[in-house]
Length: 391
Length: 166
Image (cartoon, rainbow over all chains, first blue to last red; front, side, top):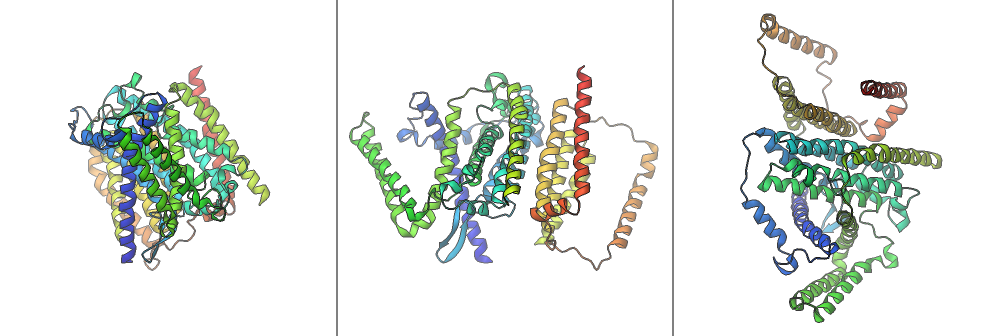
């Protein structure tokens, strides 16, 4: 019992620390990727290649004046950002990052807690996340904030239906609500993944579109359309309260990417079994990345790159070497595949932000109710019929 | 541990439920109602009915209350104005409340004698599988009738909305 509490506390600290770091650096990655899509260097001044930019942003946000306008509804105004960030961080607690591992004699799962209704838990928590935005918009007592809050609640109610229906189809295929068992049913080869199971790619597409809307990302970022609504629901917020909305958005993005990985892409499972050498993919990819970085460091286009690229290359080669150590493989390999799949979906989020313009509000609602909802409904119906026919 | 959690969340549920009535602004009442729904979900979870708990959060706290809050925000409803208390209400309020609570306690005592205590987590039919089986075998008729009832309500809402448009 005592060791259970100690292990759980350690796991909570590790997961929370990693999540916070990833949250900060996801924003750096986003700015870099968007910048390169728009052919400009992006953050470059703070640290090598702007790597210390997130730290500078955090310091800036903390030291800004924490303003509470006199005309707001104070209780709800203060509660809203807290609610948003709590609900965003809560769902990470049921997400499994890997299988059971042995650490110093203890056997434990790479997951904070396994609920046998984990998928429902995440749906419930994400449906509570609307309140943070809706109440922020209302309590600010400001036209633009109210409109932003209204838009976001309408949008999230509408897109939650196709999202839930799209989640239900792969759950039917895997016949479980536990996220851990969900991954176990997709073990083995690439075609065991739910994405390639029959016509489940329809659910995947519906899920991804609805997830974009649920996290208020481009092209569905109507709640914070700055050319119509100033900054939408968080117009009146400053300093850390603004930062919590910002963090909540990124945490939600990470959660839905993890969900997509678990539901459709087989979680921490490698695309093909270890007997056929899937264990060497991380070593090879890191080694190749390291060699490329070294090569560019030696033939540097800019003066600074003489130092920064070789350093990055050496770090990549060291990581590649760590993946070769048998002791760490049982922990690192599942983590690598999980992060690679989740990272690919996060990259898709950023890529689309750099590609598509924003929808008009009536297009957004019409699309949800007239296209996405019927497609999700038919897809669930067809999945149910197929499973009933073949079982 | 179970008992402490039960007392904490039962307390929150009762206080928030009273707050729903006491608060004069609709948004504050709605937020209190969300707290009631949330703590009820925790109570279901303590009893071992995890699917009902999840459904409670998703359907009531997550969907229905969002619609409440949405409508209040859309209409921008202001706070109630305090009217003068009626003579009958101030005279009969407390005695009627006491009588109601006494009746409730009496019937609870009668129907559930104290030897059948509640066991936390003693209920085994709370998984999604068990609820699904019960819905589609034992309670199939009420389940189907409810779905038709909801369909009628949706059709009615559309008819009413169309009438206003014309």
